[in-house]
Image (cartoon, rainbow, N blue to C red):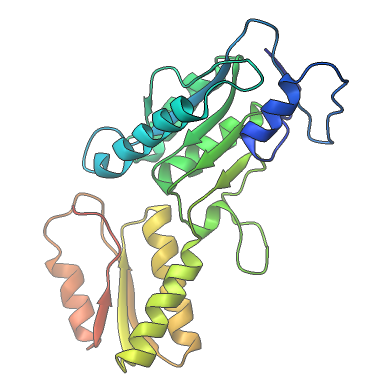
Length: 250
């Protein structure tokens, strides 16, 4: 399998189907193309959080990928394989380590993952630089794509896509419900430093303030903390009417 040094970015299966087609010359777009030699498989990798506390998200994602490959079948007579599922550990370290493994295999054309935004922020620069497409079914951090005006986020890379929503929409929805439906005017927000939680807490805070609400405390805890008394004391001093706390269980 041969890849130009920037893989064509678009819908992965559609692109590969065109590249695998015979009988006509395939003209690559400005971002390149994938070429699959006769007898080779189309190599895709699954990168999900398949162990640990977030396996409830990653395992179903991987099973869905396996089912999709089975149901979709061959593309233009070429079989598709995802190899052995890789674990992003729902962390920057896990995402980076798995990405290094993936990019070392030049036969891989794309990645379906990660489960977690923090893992994607570390993995997507490597995947994109290697000329591969990366599509996540569950990343929602605004930093990975763009704001609602189309401005690229700080963690955006040209090979990265997702099918999940942008948390700017989720933050807006929570803010509108709190302000308009519950009548809340003072809120506090807490994150744990992860791109997912920080991005969502920021999205909520920005939207809530635009509606006229007040964020009395915006603070963070460390991942793994179980004693949050110091942070809660800080929050209580601001007398919020609600607490927005979008983190996974510690």
